[in-house]
Image 1 (cartoon, rainbow, N blue to C red):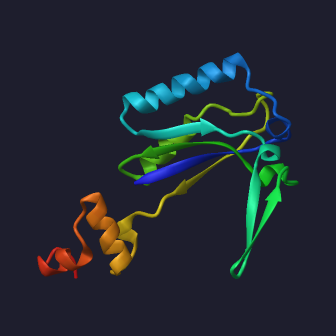
Image 2: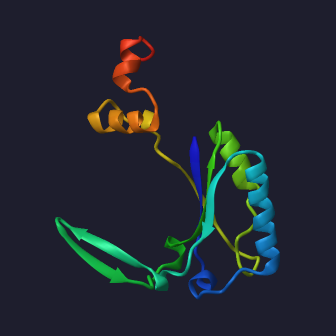
Image 3: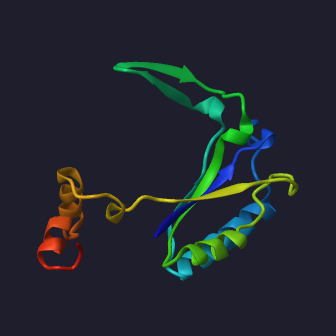
Amino acid sequence: MRFMMIVKATKDSEAGAMPSEKLMMEMQKYHEELQKAGVLLDASGLKPSSKGWRVKYSGAKRTVIDGPFAEAKELIAGYTIIQVKSREEAMEWARRFPNPSIDGKEAEIEIRQFFELEDFGPSESVDFARWKSGRRSNRELRRKGEIL
């Protein structure tokens, strides 16, 4: 099971304020613990939304909208992706996440589970993705009586 720990942006992170040396060391130590446990897939901080853009879709039409974006609390300042055996294990790691606030006060992380190929029903595109990743297709598993 893969989970993303999403660090919510703040006014400070959106203003481009860099984390303190103390926070950088805490995050480095935390990510080293994840790595030693064999669960860390990726982690990074993101530049403020003023350095980014959005693409808005309206049917086949696409419109590019340059940042910054207004609601800091709806933006992402960073993320950590882990692969664990259970939701409970992900929750345990999330509880240990250092306070990501630049000023050490208010901060929030959101944890979301990724969809896995097993979450989708049978289809050609899912079977192709399984084949590309070396996993067996639903059709093959059904044929062998491993799933209904």
